[in-house]
Image (tube, rainbow, N blue to C red; front, side, top):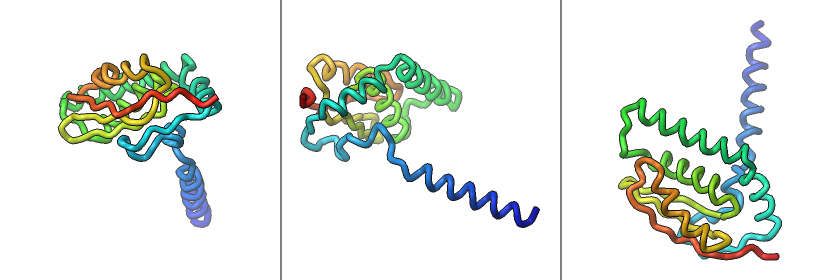
Length: 153
């Protein structure tokens, strides 16, 4: 048993390190800075994002995740002053569920201001960003630096 325990622990550490090595799917093609110049997504990238994010199952999962976070926040006191990472994550999930073929980044500040940058494929998607972001508890204002850039064909 004494020899088995270190083996199991080291196996878990190796597995965990390998799992953490894979980059997040949503941040893979998004610009690192929300104020960065707009980059036009390729047609293949847009199609792949649409197939993944527009699936009804994926949209339901993202919306359930947002509801669960809101419930946890309410249980812990319902404080509207949320951590920046929480706001960024929830707004990113909300936008991903409702604007699946956009390449958007989200940056939050301590005062509840959220800045959204990147690209979307049309004006309708661009106009959805602010109202969707404001649905998240703790978001006080939204700065939209995103641009309309249809995918390359």
